[in-house]
Image (tube, rainbow, N blue to C red; front, top):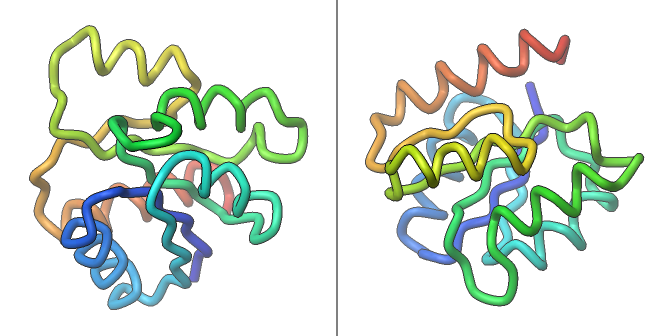
Length: 124
C-alpha cells in the first residue's frame, strides 16, 4: 500500500490516525510538528502527507508552503486534518497547496476512503 507521513502534535490523535492507516495496510511515519515533517519528507519520500494545521515550531500551512516550494516534494499530495473549519482556514490551507482539508473529528473509515481516493487520483 502507500507510504504516509503524518504530522500531528496531539499524541492521541496522531496515534489514532496512524493506527487507522496502518490497519488499512499503509506504511505510516509519524512526526509531531511541521518542522519534523519537513525534515522527514525528503528522507522517506511519502506517497501522501497528512498534517494538522496548528502545531508548535512550524504550522502545517508553513510546512506545506515549504514542501510545495521544494522540487523534490512539490508533487506529493498534502491533506490537512484540522478542527478549524472556518472558510478562511480552509482557503488558507488550499492556497498553501493542500490537496484536501479534512475536518476533525472524522470517522476512521472516512479517512481511509479519502486517502484511497487521493492516492488513485495521483496514480499511486
